[in-house]
Amino acid sequence: MRSRIRKNDFVIVTTGKDAGKKGRVIKVFPDSGRALVEGINFVKKHSRPRQVDRRGGIIQMEKPISVANLMLFCLKCEKGVRIGVRVMDNGERIRVCRSCGNEIEVS
Image (cartoon, rainbow, N blue to C red; front, side):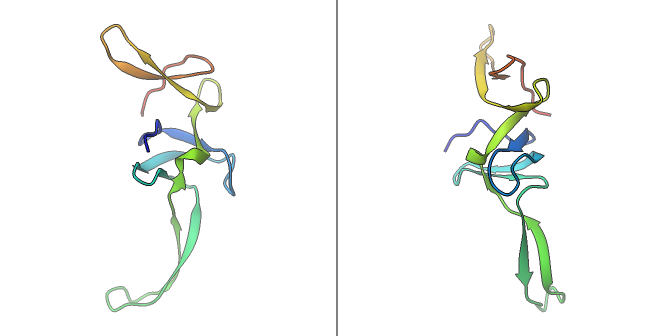
């Protein structure tokens, strides 16, 4: 599934238990249509002690979230926005905010 959300984009969660939270995309999984977002969708994993890792217990970790539940966050509009593509004169394609027309750069 093709997504317009890329690594290092600043996104906002639209639905679910983390709705309204913002974070930066760490990694995108295009095959499953999911993205790993910093500080979003924390789950607790119970792990048993192993010989390699002596300590077991409850580990808190981030899980990937569906890209359908994410919107790109425009810093100029200060809200989640849809993304458009503008073709420049030299043939370069850039992503733009559909609300204000501001160019969205990956930081």
